[in-house]
Image 1: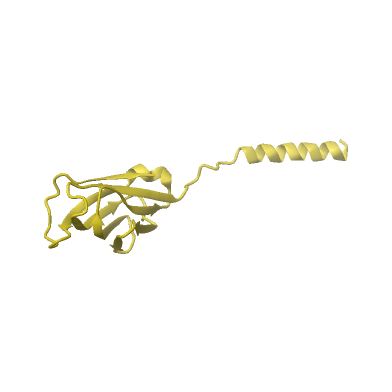
Image 2 (image 1 turned 120 degrees about the vertical axis):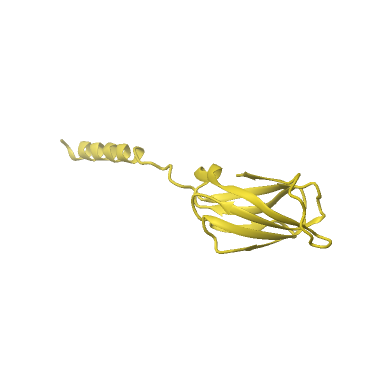
Length: 130
């Protein structure tokens, strides 16, 4: 074989190897947590528990809110304070968006903003999206 043909064969072989690689590994990203509240603007604090297959990687509260957390693990408690309204209020970082459906978040308690008395959880809900 001539040198040009050998180089061409090598190039085709390398392209074939590259096309067999698996680029579908974990993709990190953010999940958005949204709240449904029967008391928009009148809730001042919420305590949540996030459970997932891997530790969450970060957490950030929406505009005008503050978030406090325990160390980020596969089960993490979070407290969010400030005027809570309907809609997105929290962002959670995860190591693999492919596992987004395996993350669950539950409300432990909610307090009124006026006197911080605990409210009944009836009518409240959370959704996670990405």
